Image (tube, rainbow, N blue to C red; front, top):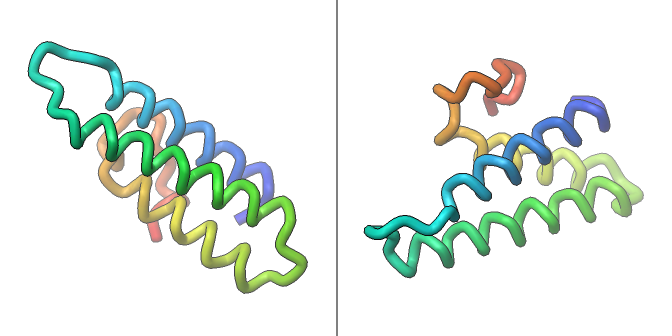
Length: 84
Protein backbone atom coordinates (compact mmCIF):
# COMPACT_ATOMS: atom_id res chain seq x y z
CA UNK A 1 0.00 0.00 0.00
CA UNK A 2 1.45 3.37 -0.98
CA UNK A 3 1.63 6.40 1.29
CA UNK A 4 -1.22 7.98 -0.71
CA UNK A 5 -3.38 4.88 -0.24
CA UNK A 6 -2.57 4.82 3.46
CA UNK A 7 -3.57 8.48 3.74
CA UNK A 8 -6.87 7.77 1.96
CA UNK A 9 -7.60 4.89 4.34
CA UNK A 10 -6.72 7.07 7.33
CA UNK A 11 -9.09 9.80 6.15
CA UNK A 12 -11.82 7.22 5.50
CA UNK A 13 -11.46 5.80 9.01
CA UNK A 14 -11.48 9.19 10.71
CA UNK A 15 -14.66 10.13 8.83
CA UNK A 16 -16.39 6.87 9.82
CA UNK A 17 -15.30 7.25 13.44
CA UNK A 18 -16.65 10.80 13.46
CA UNK A 19 -19.98 9.51 12.13
CA UNK A 20 -20.06 6.74 14.75
CA UNK A 21 -19.36 9.26 17.49
CA UNK A 22 -22.24 11.57 16.64
CA UNK A 23 -24.41 11.97 19.72
CA UNK A 24 -27.78 10.27 19.55
CA UNK A 25 -30.44 9.79 22.18
CA UNK A 26 -29.50 6.09 22.70
CA UNK A 27 -25.67 6.44 22.41
CA UNK A 28 -24.01 4.41 25.16
CA UNK A 29 -21.02 6.02 26.93
CA UNK A 30 -18.69 3.16 25.99
CA UNK A 31 -19.46 3.72 22.30
CA UNK A 32 -18.10 7.26 22.55
CA UNK A 33 -15.03 5.95 24.38
CA UNK A 34 -14.57 3.35 21.63
CA UNK A 35 -14.58 6.11 19.02
CA UNK A 36 -11.93 8.02 20.95
CA UNK A 37 -9.79 4.88 21.27
CA UNK A 38 -10.06 4.26 17.53
CA UNK A 39 -9.02 7.86 16.80
CA UNK A 40 -5.94 7.38 18.98
CA UNK A 41 -5.04 4.16 17.13
CA UNK A 42 -5.43 5.87 13.75
CA UNK A 43 -3.28 8.78 14.94
CA UNK A 44 -0.63 6.36 16.22
CA UNK A 45 -0.63 4.49 12.91
CA UNK A 46 -0.25 7.74 10.97
CA UNK A 47 2.65 8.78 13.21
CA UNK A 48 4.34 5.40 12.73
CA UNK A 49 3.92 5.64 8.96
CA UNK A 50 5.60 9.02 8.92
CA UNK A 51 8.42 8.32 11.36
CA UNK A 52 9.30 4.61 11.35
CA UNK A 53 12.66 4.07 9.65
CA UNK A 54 11.95 0.42 8.88
CA UNK A 55 9.27 -1.16 6.71
CA UNK A 56 8.08 -3.75 9.25
CA UNK A 57 6.47 -1.27 11.73
CA UNK A 58 4.88 0.53 8.80
CA UNK A 59 3.46 -2.77 7.55
CA UNK A 60 1.95 -3.52 10.96
CA UNK A 61 0.40 -0.07 11.14
CA UNK A 62 -1.11 -0.44 7.66
CA UNK A 63 -2.59 -3.78 8.72
CA UNK A 64 -3.97 -2.16 11.87
CA UNK A 65 -5.73 0.45 9.74
CA UNK A 66 -7.13 -2.25 7.46
CA UNK A 67 -8.48 -4.18 10.45
CA UNK A 68 -10.09 -1.04 11.84
CA UNK A 69 -11.78 -0.49 8.47
CA UNK A 70 -13.32 -3.99 8.35
CA UNK A 71 -16.63 -2.99 10.01
CA UNK A 72 -17.17 -0.45 7.22
CA UNK A 73 -16.81 -2.89 4.31
CA UNK A 74 -20.37 -2.12 3.18
CA UNK A 75 -19.79 1.65 3.14
CA UNK A 76 -19.85 3.07 -0.42
CA UNK A 77 -16.45 4.76 0.05
CA UNK A 78 -14.74 1.57 1.22
CA UNK A 79 -12.12 0.31 -1.23
CA UNK A 80 -11.52 -3.41 -1.90
CA UNK A 81 -7.74 -2.97 -1.60
CA UNK A 82 -8.23 -2.09 2.07
CA UNK A 83 -9.17 -5.69 2.92
CA UNK A 84 -6.51 -7.25 5.18
